[in-house]
Length: 196
Image (cartoon, rainbow, N blue to C red; front, side):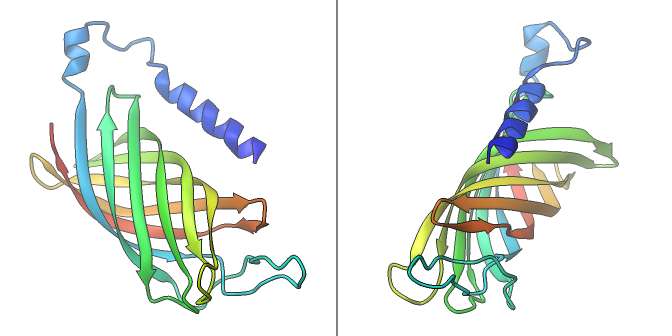
């Protein structure tokens, strides 16, 4: 987990440094501040199909699920400056459960603008946080795991304050001491309203 954590810190540090040609006028930079909130629909492969390691130290083992999980979520994008952007997202993947397995994600981190194409703002993101996972239909058979996520997509401007989040791909690295690393991945679409 040390290498992904170091990589995350370097990305956040790099995003916080403005390019040398950036405007020095505070009033000009304030015009770039904005915040948006939106809702999403996601489809994810949880990388777990209900397989456990042998006793006595039984724990979940990574493996592709035969059914993807579907779910709803919310997100917030906060733009402080052009190169300093934050994203917070939460999703509950509760539909189409296989063996009562589900996953809830609570993530936050850096959003990195890459460029613009037509009305679309292309971006990458590095998020961290945690996921709550239900491993089977057995009561209390759940756990909380550390989650590091990498992804990207494009936000397409539909109206003055409304943007469409095109297919946002996300790859997660979930780990905990009591079981092997899981690597869920999926896609998300959504729509957001800019507050200011």
